[in-house]
Every structure is written in C-alpha cells, then in structure tokens.
Image 1: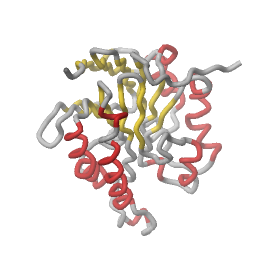
Image 2: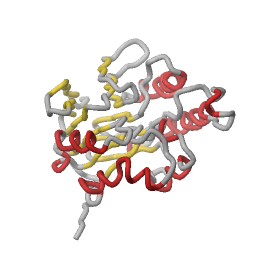
Image 3: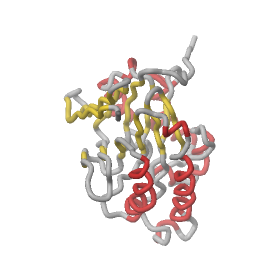
Length: 259
C-alpha cells in the first residue's frame, strides 16, 4: 500500500532536491536523485525542461514521470517550475492538468517548514515575434500578468513570515536571451525588495553561482543538467549543496536566518 504525509503548517525543518533540464534522460535523473538521497528528502523540485517538448501523454510519462513515480512520486511530493521546453508541442496546453498548483496558475507560493518558495513560470526564451512561434504566443504579456501577481504575493503573510525566502524559476536573470532579460526586468526588482535569500535556476546546462551583485541582491544558483541541488532548511540556517553524477561535492553554501 502507498502512503503519504500531508504538509504540516508548523514543520520546523524541510529538506528538498532540485533537478532540471533532464530532457527525457531517465537514467541520468535516477542517478542524480539517488546521489541526492531522495529517500530522505521531504520533496523534489523539477525546475523545468524535463522534456524537450510535449507531444503526448505517453511522452510525458515516458520521458520522466514513470521514473519519478517508481522512485518517489507515489508517496513523496514533487513540485514543478515550468521550463521553456514544456511550452512546446501540441500537448503543451495540457501541462497544467497534470501539474496543478496551490494558486491554480503555473506560478505560486509554496510554504514548507521555514521556507517560502516563490515559484515562477519563465515562459519562452525567444521574443514572441520569433518566426518559430508563428505569431501565436504572448509570453511578454503573460509575464506582465505574473509580475502583477508577484507584487501582491510578496506581501502575503505566508511569504513575509517565512524565515527563508527562495525563488525557483527555470531561466536565470542573465544570459542575454529575451526571456532571461524579461525575468531580470520584471521579477528581480520585486524579489530584491522582498528580501529573497537565493534563486534556483537551470536552462543553461552548466553550473553557475553568482553572488549578490548590482541589480540582483541575492545569490543565483544555476544548476547544471547533470547535477542535483540538495538543501536542508532548519531554524537557524538554509544549507545548500550541489552534487554531480558521481556524488561529488561541486559547491556548497549556508544562508543564516535573518535576525
């Protein structure tokens, strides 16, 4: 029999993993989750591009969900920040049916123990006018709507009362592509003002850690597609490690709770 534990509003600790940019490589995903010790983690974040495109339900399950269910997702929670590749394909519009959120949108707040996660939907990386989209997308306008939601969400008690505040979004606020610039211009100023502690991203298929710098007041961790983020939040500190496919430590950081 399967069993699960519902989220407790007064959890004192929280542990989680982040993987991204798997693009249907089940073997790599399974290895990363095992190296991150998924069995002893409270939940898992998929931070986008788990597929290269969405063309059918069979592909959705075959590319990553069957493996996720086999390992953890039948009993352990998983949360999703949509990537740009999940917007592609004739099955893409069905994505919200399979991965609902607390807000009913693809962007939402999630409170787990001492951490409030601000989960954002980056949309596509190219301009809406790009020839690839044939004039049928409006991601710039979609990010405007999301920006308005974010202004309100960051004032909620769920967010302001959290000892740690973490943003999760597939595309980082740098890199030079149109979508990345939109993340930087529309989301980052609000997150700066709200006191975000760290942002987890993917998209670039390589590991980057940018410390606080002009324009971005918090560290940004870009997880590579062949690495896993392992994090534990306790009363006094948020501890973050990045591990490779062999389980080796790539990087680590500790964020103390604000006093």
